[in-house]
Length: 126
Image 1 (cartoon, rainbow, N blue to C red):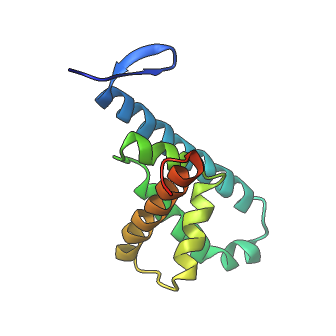
Image 2 (image 1 turned 90 degrees about the horizontal axis):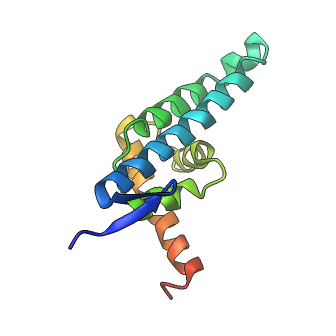
Image 3 (image 1 turned 120 degrees about the horizontal axis):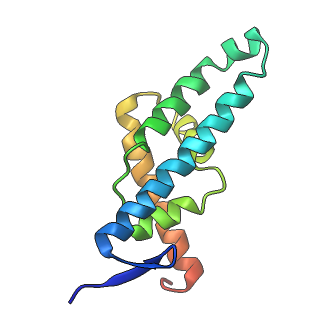
């Protein structure tokens, strides 16, 4: 038996629902990156230079979310972050590791944290 979900007022199957949520997640992160970029472009050259590391790291984060493939539960949990780009960036900075290989692990850990938090808040986990 196939499960169906309602998205945007229409009935969709699991794969369509998953793809829809992942597209929404990618758009959310891209909007956040566009806002960050727009803000950076208002800065003077020295401020932009001083922000070079942040620009590169946030660009890498946005790229990781350009084609996400998360479960609907994980995608919805990640979208609850008010600014996912900034949250992942702060996690990366806190770990004091700027290797691109470490970024995927940081995203996996943050996703697990958000999913667990969502379960606790919804009363599905104690």
